[in-house]
Amino acid sequence: MGDQNNLVYIGSNYFRQRLVLATLSGKSVKIKQIRNRDDNPGLKEFEASLIRLLDKITNGSKIVVSVTGTSIHYQPGLLLGGQIEHDCSQERGIGYYLEALICLAPFCKRPLHVTLRGITNNQQDPSVDMIKLSTLPVLKRFLGTDDGLDLKVSKRGASPDGGGEIVFTCPCRQKLRPLLFTDPGKVKRIRGIAWCVRVSPAIANRLVDSARSILNQFLPDIYIYTDHEKGIRSGRSPGFGLTLVAETTNGAFLAAEAVSNPKGSEKGPSVPEDLGKEAACQLMEEIYRGGCVDSNSQSTVAVLMVLGQQDVSKVQLGQLSPYTIQYLRHIKDFLQVIFKVDVQTREEEDLRLGGDKLLLTCVGVGYSNVSKPIS
Image 1 (cartoon, rainbow, N blue to C red):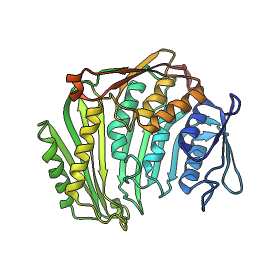
Image 2: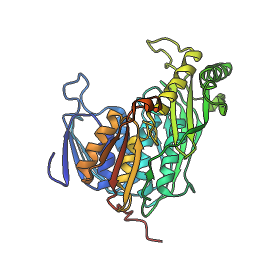
Image 3: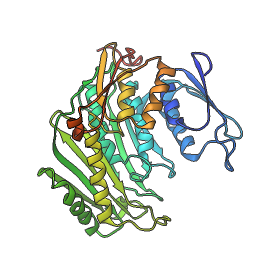
């Protein structure tokens, strides 16, 4: 893996994780043989766009990409933040870039105020709604307040042509708080947002009705907003989808979503009723896993726990996603922190409450924001 301050990886997998952790740890990273056996070798457009975004929020980063694009050497600079605008690649959703920014934003020199343009909702990446409903409440626990933490959708853009725009603001902190979150509590209410662009507004209501047909069997307190954007705010492609979030008595937010097939997809057009039911079933699955954060926010929580002050952080999660498992390996490479994982096995009669839970414990590295004076 190279020496301590210069890590070497092979292949294009987990590209974003490596760059984010390199930026936070200040270690340079070299990634070689990026898709060198493909018909179209080298970095894809969305990866190049991520590199440009990292370059915008840092000062003094050195990025060297080989002529063929199959290897990159990234030496991170200092996180600057401030006002930034960025056009994201249409190959991936805005969520791909936002997830990286959420890990970096608290450690910038100036509060981050970033405008991202591109696809707000697609099937591959978490939508901006999902990040707002489930990942931002997690970030708020580490920051200790939500002053200045906001995510606003100014325009919605479905894939493939995008046309969406969001504004994300985040305050900067000297240090993050440790997290002790081991009991998710019981689900007390479900909220959601059914959105549609460039299709009939009735589709949003059909999404809501079909999701309710499942969720009403479990809980009376359900409210799903409908969001039908028109004109310039509706992006350039037709699409619709549903994002649901379950809020628990202890303040955990578990989210799930379903998005229609993009225009011109081989799978054909999506049916709103099927999509609504799919989102409701996905949400049930998240609740069944029984974590204090949903599977989408697991990796963000792990990174922020490690970056906390030198104190113990504990969080209960459901089954780990493959993406999170790889993130934990990378955290060990870049920050030399290993999580202690306890499996909390349930008794037979309790299995209906969910499968095995995992308790992740670590001691923060005491990461402090070098550019923010101690107030």
